[in-house]
Figure 1 (cartoon, one colour):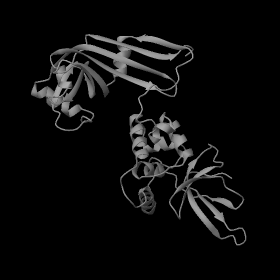
Figure 2 (tube, helix red, strand yellow):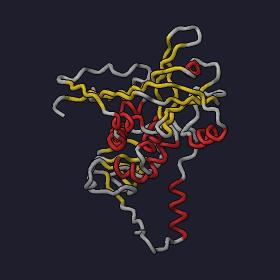
Figure 3 (cartoon, helix red, strand yellow):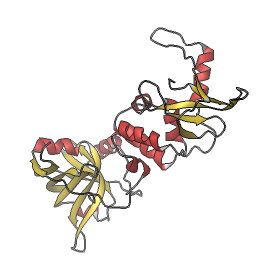
Figure 4 (cartoon, one colour):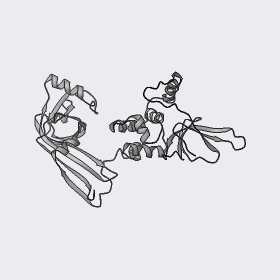
Length: 305
């Protein structure tokens, strides 16, 4: 038995040959199209992993080949539009769908590319991202592999736990990073931590959404917040990443003077190019710029890598 994405799996009653149940094949587990399959059943709209028995057969669905310069018949376009519409119900996606969509965009993948990597139908991936779906474990395993993450991460496991609870490597290697590597890891934006002395004289470390603009680290905050204490002082700013599965990670530390951005044109430019608004919400229109005078970092990997 071999199938393609979009084919139908039909289960018949052996005595009469009448269809007992049918569904669309939305996920393949083998490149050659052999079972098992992820099937979205027409009677329940649920997706399950199916190992077809002797009472099942595949009904192949012919799809017109499209390419540059070929016109798509109106009826085919209407059919595709109908297939692209997710099932009726609430349009609020579930947490798994939000994580899948966010990771896919972070990897720079289109839905079609991600679906191809995960060996599932693009329409089904759209359904997962847009509806409060409950995908099968096999679908999550393939999605996690396609997006470079884990099933636990897609499900939100460990969200309330600090990173780094995994086992240490048997032979870890701690390596210092040069300035160029540090700049590359800072990238253009993300979430980092700023170490300041608060208004009451006590040390504090707070997370902030940051951008990197012309080698300066900039972030938005409220005038009387703890992060605003950074203004006109020398501060430390840290960003890191921990890979729990492989027990490795890196960290970058930037140290330098911080100042408030006051030029209206500069403020307008920073606001326009910002990748997101501050996660903390509220009125946070005060931009602070850190000009690093020291940029250091470290990376932990296995000694044999």
